[in-house]
Image 1 (cartoon, rainbow over the protein chains, first blue to last red):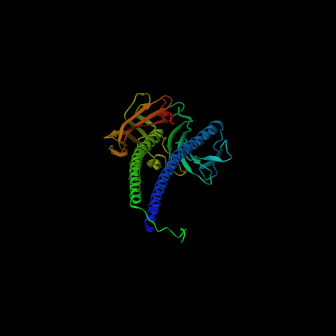
Image 2: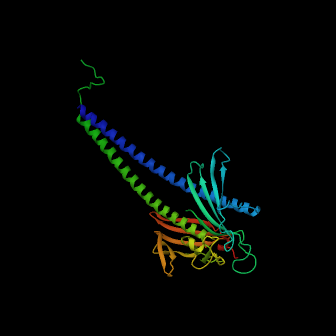
Image 3: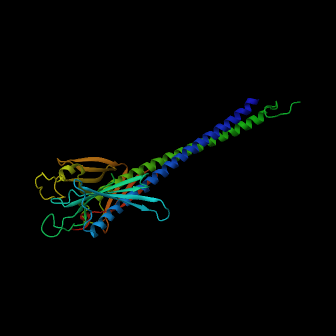
Length: 162
Length: 198
């Protein structure tokens, strides 16, 4: 008679264990969904940072005749990095790193290849990265005929997300 | 007489009625539990299938949007065409040909000819279209043939329409278990030659 009571207790414990396992599995699934949603929002944020980097470069290039500065002898790249603060907390939202390849600046190309990398999270613990490589037309003369270049100061090629 | 304590139980067990009632209740609990489990599994499977279809659609839209931003010349929809279309046709710079289309200028190399970013051979002609409910990405090879890659299944409709100010509206109608799911993406075209006349 003692054992029959024990069986009932064990059955109840088994049921509770199965229920807990189910809850655990469901919670794990929810966590995966939240993680996926966060990844989507972070990649959008990283893309926004990379776009901000390109806009920042364009603003500097438009206003400063000596920008980007001439790289040292033997080098073709100029890189700078800007970190962005969160208005509501002391933490950094992320950063963008802009790299300019000046090896195509002169004829026959007359272009600047600008790579902007948007990084979400502090620079020592990056969470998401988005890269845009854009080509800026710096030829004052038209490439196809005579007259001024209608695309001077515009992006003429664009690659992103790799 | 020994009193019942922690390690000592009264000798009396359960009566037949008590045992029957306990067994009956256990059976009811087990049946209910099984029903709930089955229902939950069915619901979760359906949600997973729907999520998968929607995720695949969103990934496809994201890929199309990225390549639209890279486009340097448009066949369909043309720059001034604001009507709805069921496909896309455009040229993007061929990244695999970078070494050929942009050879690095060296001091010892002879003067290169004038560079034309739209030169033949430096662009990749792309087509996106629907075929048997599958969204296909078709890239034109050097011999003129198209190489097709399916990027999304169970697509009922693919629609492209130009908006004002360099925008492109992409819409995908994906088949899910409960019906159809509308997915849309508004693409800002960053290259002025993709939306403004030179």
